[in-house]
Length: 356
Ligand code: HBI
Image (cartoon, rainbow, N blue to C red; front, side):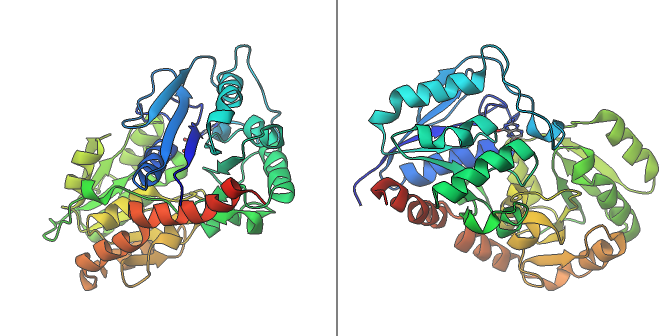
């Protein structure tokens, strides 16, 4: 296959490398690595202050849009003066002739709406499930008029959209060389996410208190009052807050835990932390909703339990001793390696590059 010249358009919600962009930052870095590793030439358009180790970076200034999760479903799209999003797509338009394909990661109406305006194929990786009527309308038009142009991470995420069958599922990928298998866990459980209500930390505290195991909490405190209230509500839980760690340290700490608890209150699109835990040989006990439930092989690499049920979570935790940690790593290698992800990305993009 002749090498492609690929231009990635980042989420406008935060400079890459600051953690503000959430999971999509890791996704953009791993798409660049997966395609770059196969000889394709990758460049990235991203907010000023971004870091994109390896790929050529085009930094853009301007005011970011409101975060999609904080908008009501029927909120109109708001484009501020000197819009970062508009500036990023202007740059992409100016440079499109130097590329064979553009891949957009912004979860914003404008990027989806502009798809037919570009002469170089503009494809999309959708980073979240259905949240906004304006995004659903523009993305739905892309799925209807330009089949194959839009991809997402899991079937569960696709199913949140009325047009979900038209979304190409590409999963996600990790550089597994950054993750060591931990075969001798300590008596402790792990919970990894932004500390915010939709991540359901209180259920993990309740379960840890019931099984009498310490809970190691990793992630940025996004909602301080919620964090304090959750701690007060479960005084019996032995909790150690480990902070927001870089991958190198997070994976070392994760590998020493008996299991990762995943307790989402919303439909996570993928669940990078699930792939990271499995890469460290750590079984995952997750609620049966959204992306995470699709990534765990129930009874093999973890347990998928009734969403919202703390007793079910406890039952899963009590069975993790039955699972083989090397099997968890093997599943991660089969599903989430950069090679496997690169295969899926090429299969998805080849028809877009070669045209109808
Ligand atoms: N909001 N408007 C907007 N655009 C995005 O690209 C976006 C967002 N909120 C969150 C987000 N992206 C990322 O954190 C995703 O990884 C969830």
